[in-house]
Image (cartoon, helix red, strand yellow):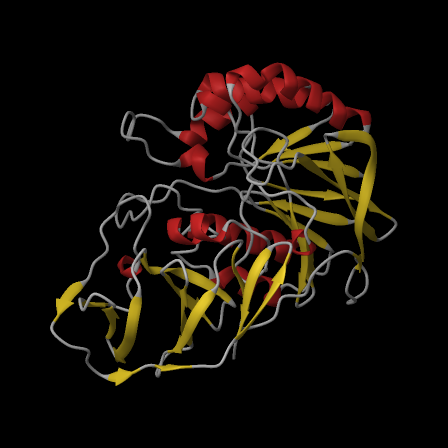
Length: 408
């Protein structure tokens, strides 16, 4: 069984001819199934016409297809905030639901779709949100196929997977990983509850495959990032991911669309053993995280009561790190240098270099400063209160991915 994973199909009208050529490149490698990873439709995104155009392109591969939706397929837009229904439009074009559970060669392929978040409590249109209903459906599918090796497919990856990303863009938009501002912890819980989840494919980040962290391995799960073939690439790469499932092995490949003569083998995972894969991959660690390509940490503060750390950088970001998730949870402040932090049980206090002091609720989703100009909920303060946060020692190291901070 060979699966082609078609990453975010965001493209311009002028790119269509080239896109059709790239679909034929994919076809040359004879996939048995194509899974479209969401964010599709190009300049006609969120329309019947855009989805039909996507369907036409993917059909050029000449094999069965399954599609899931991404955040841009379901987001609200001021022009049609209420009159566009992404799910019914998807059904109209593709004739099926945007999620599925299929058994192939003794492996459960579980595809989970991004959904439109409720308007109540809306914080950002970019959210990678999954409803409780669909999450429970996924759990029921795993129970139904208990013990069967499972490949989980979502638009965005799990928190703490350590997948390469554009840190300032995604962390500040709070859409780096699945349900970043909703219930990100439950996806980690799912992998622990069902150790049959052996591999997890995701897209969303528009990054190529020539990084160690394009494939990672955390606590028994191989996380596989799927690149893009269009102009929406963020690193000028043009990659499509292939996965072979054969004789209890899962083999991961890269198709470089600039050199389509052969597939490049990246890693091999034994689906019947609890052993790490073979090949090129990275094992993320707690307290170790990518900061950015051209940014570096200046200080790391430890919260006195919560399992959290605050990382200040040279470019004046202040990111919150959750020790349970092994990931940044969001941006407390950006483009402002922080002088010191303090905490009480119900407030986080930030003193900036210009003397202004603010406090935020450390338990509220509204504590983030968003890049899409949704107002952060803060209170101006006259002084720091509670316990002054201590800085903790940290080190840095660089990879092709960028600069990492390491602490704890």
